[in-house]
Image (cartoon, rainbow, N blue to C red; front, side, top):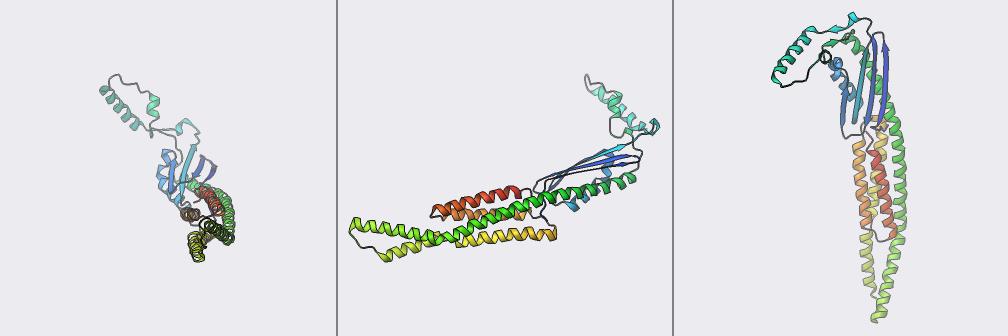
Length: 296
């Protein structure tokens, strides 16, 4: 299934010793980039958290916020790191001697220093046993959101692809008519020259000119390549439903190739119909490209 890189998920669990809340926000990005915000006491779990995310996500910028709340039942449960506080106080006192008119530091400043106050009543094992499964649940919720959004993007891309096939078919059907109209215009010019210069129309020259125009205006190869690229887009989106691989970059490359062929069609145009077809194709390609930027 096609997956979007844009999604949101939140999970929270209340436990006998407190609660854990996890919030995930994902947006489009060329690679997988994680920004993790969590309490210092959970830093030991950061690598496990990153490994779990990498196992689920291939691309996108992920903001991960973890909130940990530990219930306190009494003042005796609040830990105080006396040794660290003493070291901080002595260090601040030494710094005061070096700095002219140093700002005063009160007890609250020292208590706010990481590690001085230890309010944890739950060991790391208990936190890990609660946090990691909750993260897995949040990631699954995020993936479901990515799939729903991806399904909408896939439908849009399929619709635009079908619209492009309609334009391609129109160009193919009109090419004989366009060449015939070009022939008639050329014959008219030659007839006017005959009248102006009292000379015979050179039918051989006429045929040469028509062959040259037909070769210059031949867009069959461009039409075939457009069809091939559209087939590849459909194959890529269908194939990913079975493999769960990231396809955003491949689709973005195919958009570049489609745009190249649409530009060539415009440069070879000898009629308003093919010029308009080139413009319509490029509009559809740009609409697809904007949405593909959000596909993982």
